[in-house]
Length: 186
Image 1 (cartoon, rainbow, N blue to C red):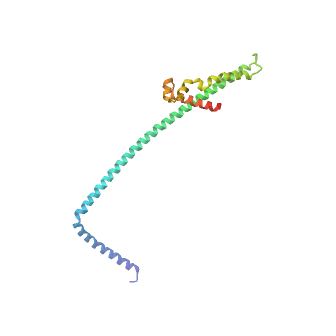
Image 2 (cartoon, rainbow, N blue to C red):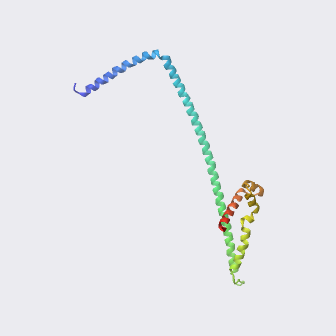
Image 3 (cartoon, rainbow, N blue to C red):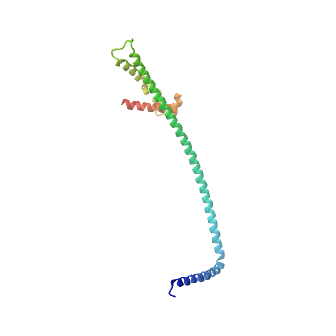
């Protein structure tokens, strides 16, 4: 019996015999504790059912919240896209207006330098005069005095829009342009 496999077999046999004896003892104990064990099993089953119902309710709540979030995000994405389009249209319009003013200035210069016409000895003066006359009406605060009066008195853009019959976006643009004008004049 010097070989280790013999010891392993003997230990395995002891475990098998012990396993056969133990269940018989616990069967006898289970007969005396039967009602208590059944009540505990029922309580555990009831608890498991309640936990499962709560998990289902949480999953439904989470999925509803997720769906609401996705819908809200889709709406916001749509609004952002619309606002970006409007912003691009305003930039294009502003670019066209600036381009039109530049064309007018160039055509005035071309008209002034055409042969056969009298050209002033001081070409800077005619250009300076239109700019001076253009500068006065282009002052945003003078041009939109009523709008700035309402704005400075603390009225909202909604109120100003209704009062003056203008679009809120137009009012915001005018206010922004006036701020830029103040910065450039400062």
